[in-house]
Image 1: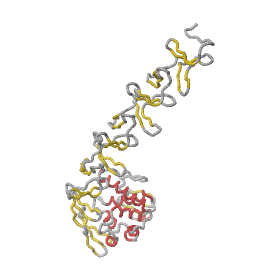
Image 2: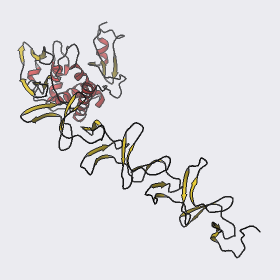
Image 3: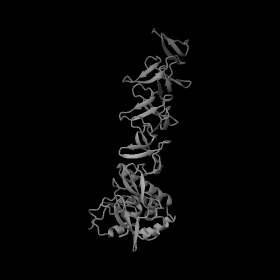
Image 4: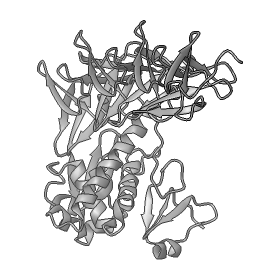
Length: 436
């Protein structure tokens, strides 16, 4: 007889002979392959019936499952060994997890590809981007995290990558150290060639006016401080020195000439003619109507039935005119909109714009959303060189300055073969007037 035999009197269940464990079925046969008892899984060699314990490796020699050294059941879930290393085994198959894992609560973990050990602490990828995993439970950190030293860092919610440099979170800009990721919040700071002011309490980049130590500074919608320039803000012209300190140069730099209003654009160092509505429309000449309010009114008047993108495209055309390299257009939004000789926007003279300035919008919510979006796209282009892109447009950089209805466009004496243009809903957008 062989070294192991079973008789009718042999007990069933787990049997250990000469250091090897078997499972004897009721019919006296040795269990081979998988066995599940009371919610736990066991495995027995398919040829010999010997119970498998410890690590099981695949054909390449890589560990894939673990069976306890005592009872020999297959481990599942999170398991921490005597060295403090944590691994994870699939709840159903028992296969050891390698790479990423997201649990039922949407927390993410990472397990090294070789050992399967859970990552904890700082982990840097091949692109030198950093993530942080909790030392306590291995969960990947996302969003704002405050260290024991009181420093703040931000980890991208979708992938856990730590932010460095200048980043936008929700509607605010912040700066994070490129080496440590710590949020900067010590007031004035320089990023590249641009100056910002980061709030000492929460690190947010300041936008709009800042009064500090008896001086006034202005920061655009991207948080960039104006310096070494002349700019009109809400109808008032200011000169900003090399340190960004503002000095008001004029409130109403204009004269009336017949049906037109002659204004001086300090930045362009040039005079332009405005329609008479420039003085007649409330809040325009005196700057009480903000650039955002005016741009939203233009969006609604010109493209109120063309959705947010259609209105945003109109707003970008206005904004693009303010940086015209030939200075055919003024550098201020209100000057561009009300420019005459010839009339630029018919809504100025036909009452449509005035209606919106008095609060009678067709689609106020989307008009303001479009205006804000356009101002941000434009600011990022001017300050960071980011291309002006809009969904639904083929152009890779929205540099259009003109728009009109398709019928009006076709009626113009233009060389259409040389024009850069495209149509979006009820408007054709184009860059320059090229006569036919």
